[in-house]
Amino acid sequence: MSWHLGRMCGFDLETTGPDPLTARVVTACIVQVGGGMTVSPANWLADPGVEIPEGAAAVHGISTDHARAKGRPAAEVVAQLIESLETTITGTGTPIVAMNARYDLTVLDREAERYGIKALTDRVPDLKVVDPFVIDKHVDKYRKGSRKLTALCDHYQVPIGKAHTADADAIAACLVAERQGALHPPLAAMGLEQLHRAQVEWAAEQAASLQQYFRKKDPAAVVEGAWPLIPRQQGEA
Image (tube, rainbow, N blue to C red):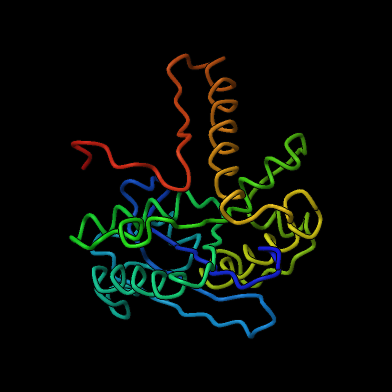
């Protein structure tokens, strides 16, 4: 069975900000999709332990007061997320599907470090990830317009529920990945290991190209090329 016809583990976070090295988890969803089985979502609301900026709250709809009143302690949520992902994917060959995986998996990794929790990549060294964002930029690199999830849903004719809620976004990412596999036979023909390695290369190429573009105006511009998460640096806060 091709990877895009099998079971997928959708993963999405809504957070306190755009920098994955400092962002904190606010809401999260892990959802199993595909393989001819029912959709099975699990959702979390965390108290991130810091103020949620108004800009972030405007995107996902969770205020600091709401998170403090209704959310579980962040360390508890992060531990449960990692354990749930490990349980879902270990021994099953199920890939994690995450839109712009570099962001979500890096946020989760730094949160684990913050709370002294064993990281997902230490628990599952052979982690396989499918990233509709990286795939789309590779298979249709010259298409104009946005590459955000809502735009990809429009392009691939995939319905999306309430965008910027973790459960709707996680399910939509899986459906987009399914469509990408269906529409691009060379992609569907890849095994998960091959697809994962290819995305590592594609993400690096895409970052290098974007960095070259940015450096026309800012010679010091740097675009992160590591995928599916940014490695920890010595001395990183």
